[in-house]
Length: 117
Length: 113
Image (cartoon, rainbow over the protein chains, first blue to last red):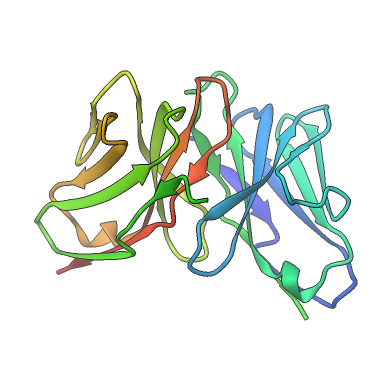
């Protein structure tokens, strides 16, 4: 299989605090992981591409200082939402590209629901 | 600018019949297409993919058709089962090795028992 986990599945925090979300590939190595966010009834929007051992590549309009990404190992990437505000409330989903797997195919985690009060 | 479009936000199909989900794209650079299935509060699950060198790919009950000239792809599910009820997203990327996926807005499929 190609299992990707995310932790936590749900988090509620106060405005101004920072929240860390973990994404792990459980049964394969992932040199590349991706972070998406999805607003209600909308599509998944790519935020950034995370490469193991190097800096993340952010999509246009995504603040790199606000959404800190660290890809410390071949199985773990983290997204930290710094100084979260209510408009950051969303569903955050990570995916992983399987090393040596079929190009273009990403395997997704179950997502993290962030609610900022 | 929505480069990948799914114009039907919802679709209802009788159990046992064929479900056809459609997707259109505007970027002629896209050459790899995927379909994902998503349940509420879960991440998308990969279903099937097709590269632009093919016009059809089949995997069990799922078949994806690609019409490059029309920039259109479709997912056929036959026979449809209640467990197929979910939101289906099509996604596209360009050039083997380019990792980014552009997603459509999704179609909610409901299978009626």
